[in-house]
Image 1: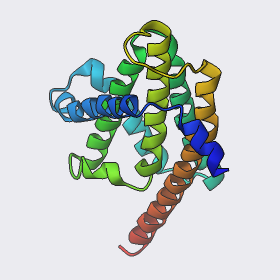
Image 2: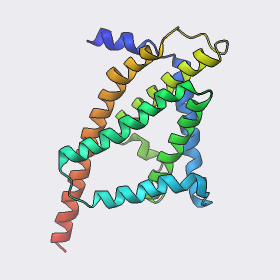
Image 3: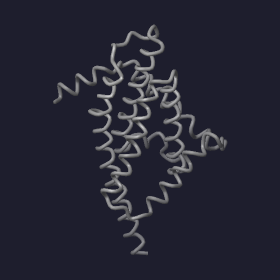
Image 4: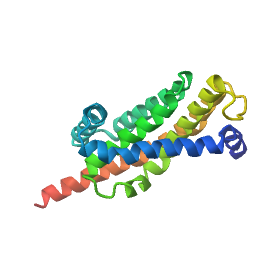
Length: 198
């Protein structure tokens, strides 16, 4: 089992992996500026999502339904990252855009507090590696397909990269979804407890 996982992970080029993280951080670091300057075309979608999430968090979701929603949302988003490899340069834009969107939602939700520290939360420890792997796979496929002289990369088909999605990305999203579901349910219980004791 472990050997199979290591074989799948061997597809990843470490330099591309680090570059994908850098692109994400660029977007994440730019988010507070976009938020304060109210750059509409950058903030409209993530702030709409943030407000929707705040409204949904107040509802008493069944744990299974909540998990299914969180897992579906993240898995579809990262699947689109993989397919972005078919468009020249699009994976880079997606990596920066994802960092920006997550940053704007985080900054809005936390009101600017503990902004960078929040990346070390239990959910992000599994969710972010899943995202970075999806960016890396898309960028590598993009380079191999359109810019083969840019990097010396192993010749891997798109279906080969999709093994990363099925056997690495999705399991990481399952773990992050379970943790996030538990945290949301506990936070709701604490809020109910505080309300009952006021």
